[in-house]
Length: 493
Image (cartoon, rainbow, N blue to C red; front, top):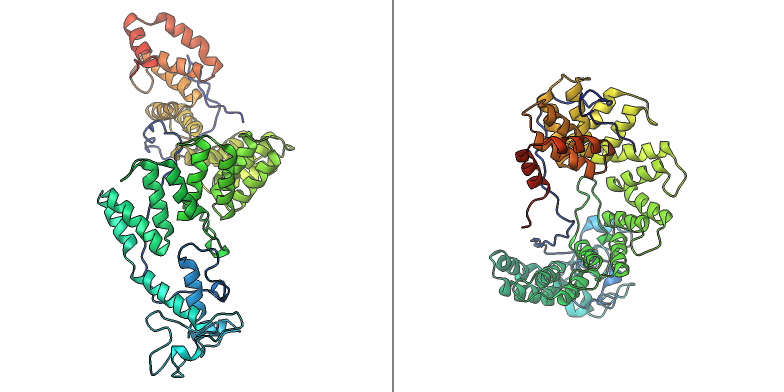
C-alpha cells in the first residue's frame, strides 16, 4: 500500500500527510533493541489440587472403559467419573437419568474419604456395605469396583506432593533432583506438567546432558495424550498466545521440526504438529498454517487454504490473521481484489489493537482510499499505531509535528519521532531525520550522522535518498567521514 510520509532533503517542506491527534508533550517511545528471532518459550507452572471429589462421565469408567488407552492416570477422566456418580441433588436434577439415592447412578456423589459411607450408613443412606453390591452395575456397565477405583485414585492424587516437590527442587536449582522427582511424579500420577518439564530439562540440558531425542519423547507424552472436547483450548482475544501445557508441548514439537533444533529440518513434520495444535483449539497455530500455505513453505502455495486458516483464526478475533486477510483482499493476492472486504478485515484487526492494521486504516482515512477521507479519524489511528511502535505511523506523527498541520509545530518532537521510526527501520523516517540533522533543525547539526541516515535510507530501498547521500559523502571532512564509516562499517566483534 502506498505511503506518503517523507520530507524533501533541502527544504523539509514536502509533508503530504495528515497526522494523528496526539498529546503535544507526549514523548515518543524509546528506540527498541533489534528484536531476536522468534523463539519458543517452554515454561512450567505450579498447580493446586485439593478436591475431595472429582467429575467423570460413566462412559469412561473401567467396565465403562475407564482404563482404555491410558498408560497413566488421567485427572480429567477422574473428575468426570467421580462427579458423575455423586449424591448431589443439583446434579441429579440436571441429569434426568440421575438418581441421588444410588451411588452407582448418574447424579450420586462419591467422596474419596468414604465412597460408600461407613459401616452404619453409606452414601445412599441405606446402611449397606460396599460388598453388598460390589458387582452390581448401572445400564452403562459401571460397578462399585469402578467407584472404589476412582475414589482411591483421586485420594492418591489429592494427597500427592511429588509434583510440588519437583517444582521446588527446580526452583532451587537442584536440577538432578528435580529431574528425578518430575519422572517419579509422572510415573505415579501422569501429570502433563511433569512430562513437559522433563522435556524442557532434556532439551535445555538441565540436570542431565542435553538430549533432544528424550526431550521429544516427553513432549509427545503430552501432545499425544487422549483428548476430549472438554480439553479444547479456550481462546481469549485479550491474551491470544496463552496456551495450556498440551498446546505448549505441541507447538514446541512443531517449532523443533520447523527450525531443525537438534533434529533434521522437517517442514512436513512441523506442519503435522501445527495442525495438531490447531485441532485442539490453539488459534495462533491456524494463523501459522495460513502463512505456510500463503508463502509455500515446502508446500505448493495455496491461497485458498491460507484464507481458510486465516478466516478460522480471524473469526475468533486473532488480529494477525484479520490483518493478513485485509492485505490479501486489498491487493488481490490470488483472489479478486475487494477493497471493501479488505477494509472490514483491517478495521476488525485495528479494533483489536493490531499496530499495522491501525496504521493502514489511518492511511485509508488519510487518503480517502476506500474509506471516506477524514483527517481527524486518520489522526486517531496514526497516534494509536505510533504508540504501539509502528514505524510508518511514527514517521507520520513526526511529519505532523514538523509541519504544524492539525498539531502545533514542534521541531524537537518531530525529530524525536523521526529518530524512533528510523531506528525501527522506516526508510522515509531515515530520510527525514537525515534532512533535519543536515540543517540542524530540532537539535544539533551533525553532517556525519546525516550522511549515515541518508545512506541507510538508500540501502533500505528509498530511491530519492541516493542523490543526497552521494552529495553529502563527497563533502564530508576527513573527521566526519571517519565517524560515518565507523558507524556504517563497525569492526567485527
